[in-house]
Structure formats: C-alpha cells, structure tokens
Length: 144
Image 1 (cartoon, rainbow, N blue to C red):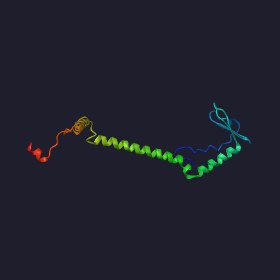
Image 2 (image 1 turned 180 degrees about the horizontal axis):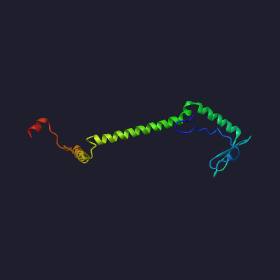
Image 3 (image 1 turned 90 degrees about the horizontal axis):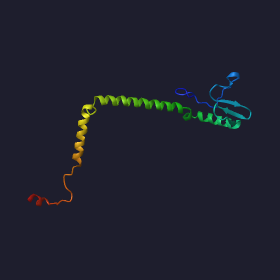
C-alpha cells in the first residue's frame, strides 16, 4: 500500500460502474469484453489491449509490487524528499544565525576585509627578486 505521501498506484484494479456512473464526466474509462480492454479518455484516441496481454501485465505488476523495494518506493522517495527539505531548512537557519553572530559575517567588516584581501593578494604576487640578475658567492657578496 502506498499510504503516507501518495495514494496507492494500482492501475490494474479496475472498479465496475453501472448505469449513470458508467461514464465519468472527466477522466478515463475502461470497457472490458471477452476480447480485451478498451481505454477511452476525452480528447484522446481510444486504446485497445488484448485480454491476455492485460492479464499478463497485471500479474507482472502485482509480482513487482510484492518486492519490498518497489512496494515501498513512493514512501521512501517521499521520506527522502522530506528529509532533504528538513536538512536544508536547518542549514539555512544555522547559516542565518552564524551570519548574524560572526565577526566576519558582519556587514561593517565586509568592505575592509575585502580591501585587506586585495592588498595581501597584490603583496603575494609582487616579485622581490629579479630573475636573470647576477649571482654572487657569499664571500663576494659580503665584499660588495
């Protein structure tokens, strides 16, 4: 059963309707005969499925949904989405709280810190020695 976040998806469990309830105002309807099934939906062409094929597909569907992975798939998917949203909400709340309390997150210090970073970067790329210059032995350098 797919209870929890979505209605159970049971496309082969058809409900018999009689009289006026036979043709729903909007939506699909099935007509079953000894030969097969006809699916009709407003605005779309009708589709015929032979009875043997429909029964085989129904049996395969029932076997697959008996396997726990497929039976619980929608529930697990909904739980995973819920958990991801809860984690994201907690992360955003924590990030907002840290931004309000941290020294580096204060708006007053952002511009000076960026300027300091720019100066440090410029200092880091400044060359202190010219490549290709003359080299000296320690004794010759000391004599100069």
